[in-house]
Image 1: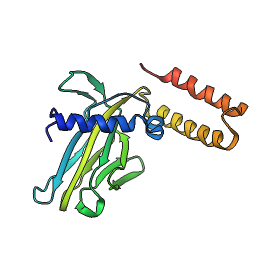
Image 2 (image 1 turned 90 degrees about the vertical axis):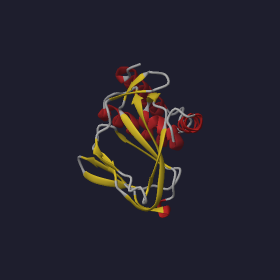
Image 3 (image 1 turned 45 degrees about the vertical axis):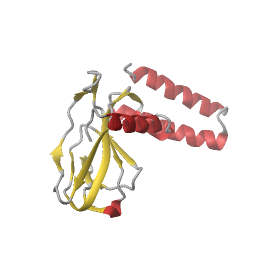
Length: 184
């Protein structure tokens, strides 16, 4: 789908609208800017795949010209895994190689700095949306700690209530860490 086409922009805006109301995505990404989603289709007939690579450090939107630092990459699966063979997103990190093939509507968020690839599709077609985002928290380790802290605070808030003194104290620490690390 042409990235500058009206349909791609409309669908991309729909994806961004859904993500920016998803608390788990917001907690994990802490997005400052989201690159307009792109779409691809890999088929067995075309033997499409994407070899091992690291994403570009900076991307520019063709319509707006605005550059963003690509801290995180995202892939939104739009085909059901049983509809195609192959087409796994393979992400390499310190703990090895991880194959990702999720149900339609599920998204994987991973460091844009990681080596990754899409294996060849051998049957059917794999349709996905992919994009990048710049986080307010540049450092991946800091972003991970903030996500863990946020998750723990949410669990405590459910168990003890949002007005519990320790929950309030941890929430303050959370916001002060974001204030300390955020680049806006």
